[in-house]
Figure: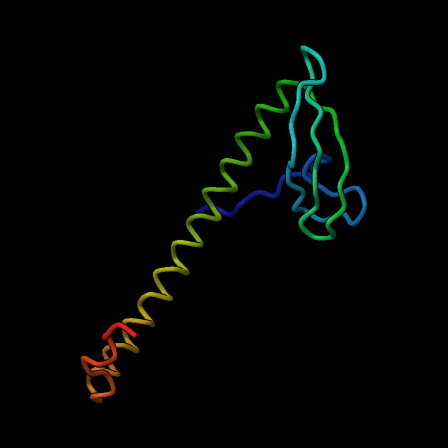
Length: 108
């Protein structure tokens, strides 16, 4: 696997207050035919700020956010599978030790 090359800091993807790397768009709206006004919220410090970007940068941001969302989804899916595997293991152990009987599944 090739090492990941670090991109230079992007003003749009860096909080101007805390320099955190997790700002996220909260609201997008066209500013004019060539620009977008975006309200950003920092995931680290919670600050909100507005930024105006070009249509081209907005398209790139949209793609970047899609990639971020896919990465988060992959990690979430992995964590969810690990949690379910642990629950299954606990359930099987409880069955093996006769800690579960039909009354555990009766309506209350």
